[in-house]
Length: 351
Image (cartoon, rainbow, N blue to C red; front, top):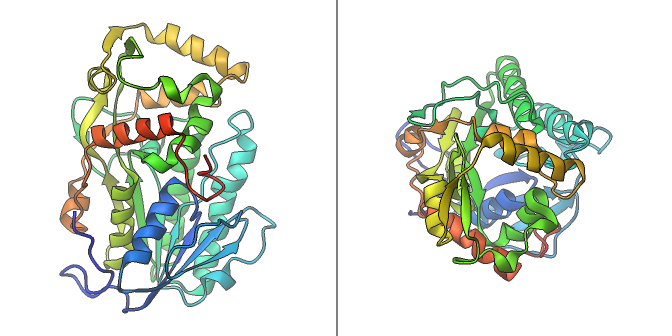
């Protein structure tokens, strides 16, 4: 897709002034690095401030860094937001899944601190990373738009926290009607450079990267409900940049075609789908999780089988967004990254 400049986008009014100052919270992870890279390449962006707990060696153009912890007691955030045209909040902690109170401190209490600082600093726009995981269980045979309920799958901490942050944003919008709030709800995000991080977060040591190649995995479990959406992280980043620029508000679904199921995944891996009972697969995953063999909770597995398929028409029509990569291409690039132990010069993405 064509990368559009930040100024003058859309027919419903101008975007931020040329030379915009954008602050990215959680700028060194899978999404953050793609968003910073897209902003740095945009000629209408004057400066980018990346905030992260650990400063990276990566030095993109027009970008400065500050080490910041968004958790309670992490210091004043408003000072970093002062003078910003938009704050893009991406910071999120996936682990430890065995200690949901720890992830709650970052994902929920940290988000509250970010929202309060946006209001205190008078930032005119907040772009928040929500997720398909915020949605209540929904259909797999049709798509839903942004009006679908966002109550999450309550057993999974990830979904529970994403849904709670959506409720926080409801209250924030009511309390601060002068601040433009955008909620991005992407499907599963993949890119080559994030492969090592995602292996650590979701699979752990039980997934040898060198074995994830076509022809070496004999079968893909074909489970009821195993149908989900994905997209390339760089495509999601393009939508974030457009949302920071255009005078839009509300939620945007982001997903690429085709939806991924056992048949499509088997095609990627030159494998074959094999029908398996959900209960047996979940029991095996739950045992591995309890023994700390895998970091991903079985509750997240339950959520994936229940997430609805999303309609991304609003992003295409309002943001002028169109993914450059298919979902298959995004997964294939991720698998290549797994085999090559790909990463970047940031702490979350380190190989």
